[in-house]
Image (cartoon, rainbow, N blue to C red; front, top):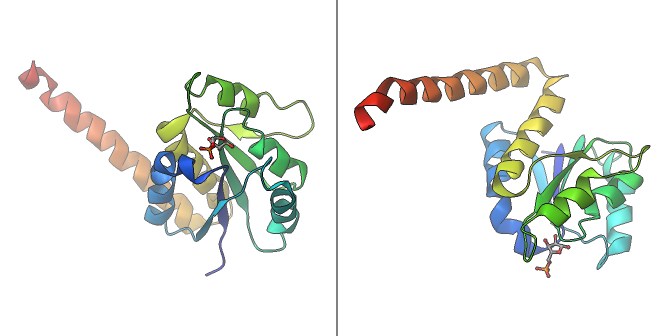
Length: 165
Ligand code: RP5
């Protein structure tokens, strides 16, 4: 099946932080393509990928990058598809550098930025699901069910918390 979501990472060293994104996309049966594409090490591949993404059927592009983290911005510069940026944690600033680099896009070319690392990866995928659900009622129902199950887990934790303390 043709991929609807592309998950780009600046380096394969980002992979351990992206499991949550892949798990969510699998859970919602979203066909996706994972790629290692670097804005500075493989800049031509990055621009070419972004330029062709729409014609290749991609609806949302997720970009995970660390340090100077310009992958999201470079990809967004070459496409009007929605781009979601995930700042990757790394030494010595633990992702704050990547967060600022990703979120601080100058006006005109947005990158929707989620929190750094593993939590951000999960949220990036859920946000991609939300975008796709705008035109897919079955997916929208699945997303609503997901929220209900998530709330049920909190209610369950609430019901037993006093026994644990
Ligand atoms: C970024 O530089 C990557 O996204 C990664 O987070 C960071 C370090 O890359 P490696 O030196 O581990 O390949 O481009």
